[in-house]
Image 1 (cartoon, rainbow, N blue to C red):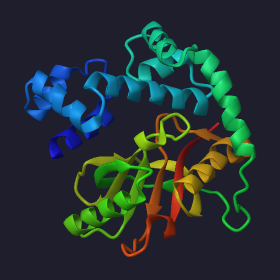
Image 2 (cartoon, rainbow, N blue to C red):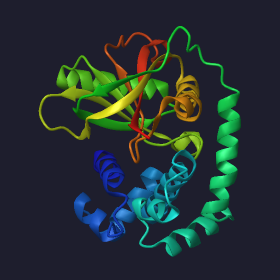
Image 3 (cartoon, rainbow, N blue to C red):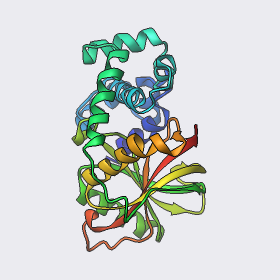
Image 4 (cartoon, one colour):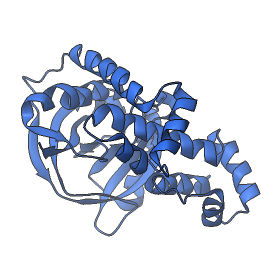
Length: 266
């Protein structure tokens, strides 16, 4: 349903706002709150409140393990919670541990996973460069559905005549169930689009393979390469992939692309 798809995109762009209510979302979708609630749950499998709460908590989980120097208060407020105490109660209710305990345990799991990765960084090393801002026309799909990703890119290409493609990793499989990990497929447009990737310094690495391979390479950059690089992750900036071309007769995993991760000097 196009209306719900647009609302999901709107929630992604505004989920950090504590003022995002059922009434606000229903008004944007031009439905009554009752009708919108029913349609949303039918389409998404969660009520608007459940969906929004999960996104906020999973965003906080990512911040806790990937930004270890970010204060828990900042994690709470940046994820859309009205206060650290409200965040802590919600976190404990869902995960049966405090945010601080999760940060300790989750970080250890991530470190162990990163140490087990053996990427081909001799042939394809990590490079740092400046990335210019890009306007995108985009649609949301699911990371694990590679066929849907290619269909979405094909649809966007037909609509906009684009030749340059970007995929934004909204969720991490380390903090979100894989079948719920969202992927924003986009094509470069000259005018203002649905989404904008801002100018930033990026660490980039060429990758070929499925989303599992991409996840491992991104984890290598974030957990191992950064230690010796003199850089740290750029706060609240999702990683993305960049394709200079796509062959729609080939599967998603058969395309070389560049994984891009926003970084800042330490």
